[in-house]
Structures are given as C-alpha cells and as structure tokens.
Length: 274
Ligand SMILES: [Zn+2]
View 1 (cartoon, helix red, strand yellow):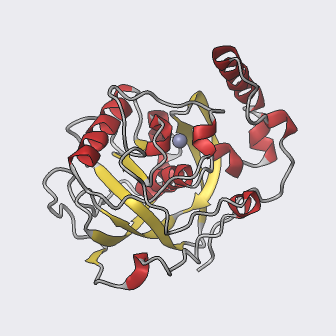
View 2: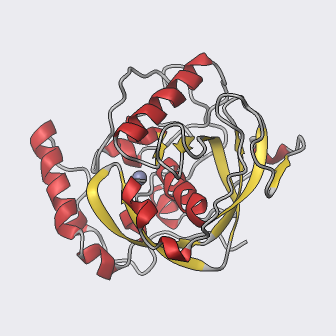
View 3: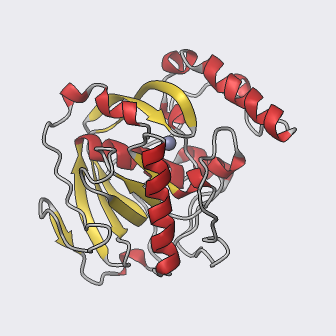
C-alpha cells in the first residue's frame, strides 16, 4: 500500500497499533499481544487446503493457489535495485509460489523490498510488485525507516476474518497516485512463517490488518480495485485507463486487461466466513 492510506480514515482505527511480530533482523519477539507459536501441526502440509480463503475470481480463472508449488532459486532471483511493477503488468495477476528456502538470498530480497518501499513512500509491499511471484510481503505501517516495526511474512494464510467490515481509503504502489475506498474485514487471524522460516499465528486489527489484507491479495493476484464497488470504481476508471495506455506505449503490447471491458460483478472477490 502507499503511504497516504495511513492518513485516511485513521480515526476509525485504533490509535495504538500493536504489532505482534518477530523483528526482521533479530528474530526476537517484540510484542506478545495475541501472539502464540504454532506447534508442529500439519497446517502447512501439502494436503491441507486454505479452506477459509474463498477467492471466487481466482477459482474462475483456474489459478487457485496450490500448497504444493514451491519457488525455485530462479523464481527468487532478483537484481537490485528493485523496480515497482505497475498495473496492468500481467506479473500482478500471476500465481505466486510458496517459499521453502530461508537463506541469505531471501534476506537480501527482503532488505531490497524494504528499500524500495521506503523510497516510494509505501507502508507495505508484496513480492509480485517487484516482479517476483513468491508468497512474500513486507510492511511497516509507520512507513519510515528506523520507526515502527518492520514486518516480514512468508507463505501467509488467513484462518479467520472478522464479520465486521470497515471502509478505508487505500493506495497501492502499483497504481501511482490512485486512491479509493475499499471495504475489508476489520480483523484477521493469520498463519505465516518469519524470515527464518519459523511458523507463527497472529491476530491483526486496524491498520496492520488492512495493510496485510491488501498485500495478501497481491499474493493471490487480486488487485485493490477488484474489491471496489462500481460507484467507487467509476471515480478511478479514467486513471486506470491512463495506466493501461502507459503500459501499451511502454511495451508496445496490448494491455492484458482493460477496466472498460471488465464485467460488472456484484461481488468480485469474496472473503472467507469462518
Ligand atoms: Zn498494492
């Protein structure tokens, strides 16, 4: 997400944001709020399914994430400095693979992702947004290096969404200068691995829950406008078309998707109801 999101509708969010995560570099627990270690359950095994994550648009395209697909070293290859991939680049819709190697290369990638996130005034960034289709996201709701907390989530899964939904004015680094309201659950319960591969589960609410859900969508190939109402979408339709034109001018290729030919849907993508 882009920084400006942090300053919109913030009155509806808790003032105190507790971030119960491991610190990126030290691996130390920095907050114990709602935090607990996972025991060695088969939750991440190849036979388990993310049954509570219902993503209709993905299912229709036949690209629902499968647990078994693991990123190879070439999937994780990158060159610094990273560049932000903008809509409508098909990378943003591609399948992102699971990470099972927690090595120096992954740590370097995470460092580079934080670098580009801060440089572009972001508060969250997913790997597909820098051209790497793996299940990895970084965020820092404060958006300033050395402030707040740097959070790294590898292979995240949502266990539970709150029934309570909230509106929030979101931005996205892949959609420069575009901001619009998106409704999402107020809180989520998630499982993930940290940068060292340790499993954990955590409850998020407020801004961290918002940033997480936005970035989690990127890992499923879902973009924030997929979740906007038609009325809200109308307010940014011209901006999306401008990005599509920019892509065509830059690449010489037809835009892989067009907002003007997008079918009107009452519910573009769903949330699990567990
Ligand atoms: Zn985004």
